Image (cartoon, rainbow, N blue to C red):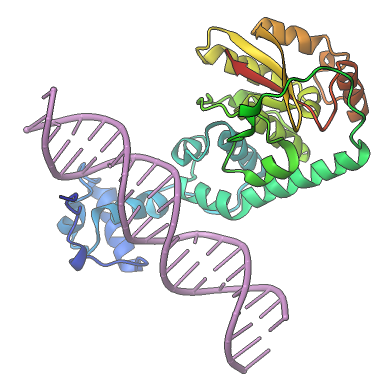
Length: 298
DNA sequence: AAGCCTGCCAACCGCCCTGGA
DNA sequence: TTCCAGGGCGGTTGGCAGGCT
């Protein structure tokens, strides 16, 4: 037996709301509230609408202080960061943006922001590739880990993963990411692409070498991740490229920070020149634009 | 001018969660 | 403890508008 419908589907009106219906609903809720029951509300006020439809109309359109359109760069940044961190949890994302509804943010993401993000990421990657053509690989033993070739991370952004940033060998980590907004709120909007790379990388626990060295803000984000997740504080640090991964150590958070801080660039914690960053990466035995640093709980 | 395409967004659908009986 | 109604939410759809051919 199926679930009983929430209303009489045959007798409710569907489609766009008329100004009269809007006025009736708004006026009633402003005077009496919803009385804690959306399902019975339309009957009580003489609307031929489903209760759920009334609720949606009120929440997404009629309630006070709703803003539509005109998303700012700052709002874009928050949406991007949170989407990368927690995925399509639109209600949670909306809760961080006063006056915005989950529906609006969802629509905005699907129609504009996703394309903007993909465009920036591609442009950024192409520019870097021109400036830093892949160097000859530094000699080191890299045992293949065949099982890592399946199910790459971030299925909802296949274009970036497949073509721009993520090699197919990266491990997939079915683990929830806590929000780490504090890591992203200070970004310069001019550096949108860097910001996206960082949050993207954070969500998968794997960091393109360039981005890792690029942005000091990655560090507090990682630290937040390490402290909020219960993995006993142990991580496996790997370097990955298109065909294989090399586990360098089982490491704790302090080991990771030690490795990062030993880089000649990281102590600046600002935005070092890309050439310097690439030089540092090479000195550590990695290949910019080819290798990735992965953190896996062990 | 007409038809087609694309982007946008309001609204719907249906599943899951929660709290009360 | 179980059941169920209502609420919440994310995915999807359909219609409209504007641009393009």
